[in-house]
Length: 216
Ligand code: AMP
Image (cartoon, rainbow, N blue to C red; front, side, top):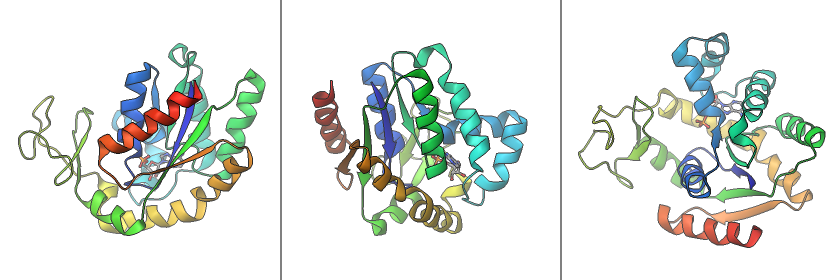
């Protein structure tokens, strides 16, 4: 199964993509995670990307496309994958289509998480992540067992630099300008599957399960 998850920051895209990937036993490929790993390790990609990421801006297409296509070459992607946070621009979507044409494979569906923008600021402002990569929680909607602590390693949870209000506004503007047009692109390919994401995590997950069940 090869899926793309599309949705604005704060729509629950990462959470849903991770859950489904673990159920389907295929990798969830988040370009945000790939880039953050590069930033942490101090790689050339990470150093260049962090200039954009901290400000909430999109990282230039050529860097992201290169990183993602290299990741797709790895063996664990052979059985399928979920793309989370890629493509984010028309350029990226076209590069992906081109790479797939060469391999003679295609995307099964593009799951588009639909949510009112007024809800997104609240969701993003309350998001806290484990500094050791064990996942994310929300102070109100998905609190950890012990307040402020990772459920897995007990490290103090932190707020992502780009979840601060100023960056969030830039990210939402980038989503509207660059990523929303992808809906039309994938609707044109008859691959777009909208899902209402303004519901509890488990309810949205159920809707996605039902949709994916119909695909296979
Ligand atoms: P995310 O974790 O998906 O919210 O991504 C965090 C940040 O990484 C974004 O705000 C961008 O700066 C960068 N990023 C992630 N994926 C992409 C992409 N496909 N294209 C450009 N920038 C990206």
